[in-house]
Length: 88
Image (cartoon, rainbow, N blue to C red; front, side):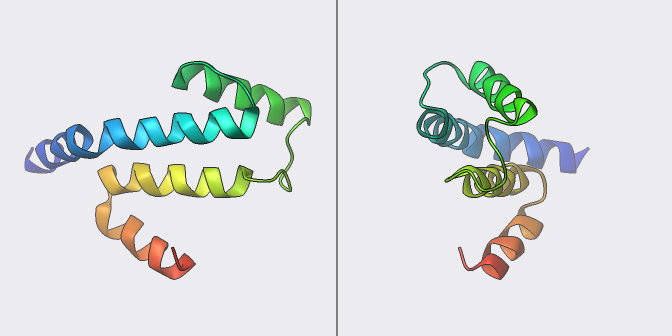
C-alpha cells in the first residue's frame, strides 16, 4: 500500500510537467496540434501507416524521453539509471 501512495505522490508531482513536455514534443514531431491523447493516437496511426519510421528525426528521442518520464513515476531508481547509461 505504501508503494501505491509513493507512486501517486510522484504522479501528482511529476505528471503534469511530463505530460506537457510530451505534448510539446509530439506537436513538433507531428507538426499537429491537439491534446495529448489525440496526438498519441496520431503518432500511432502514422507509425502504423509507415509515415513515421525508426529514422524519423526526433522520434527515438521522444520515445526515450517519454519512457524515462513514465519510469520516474513508477520506478524512479530504474529510470535514473537508464538516463545516466544513455548520457542524458
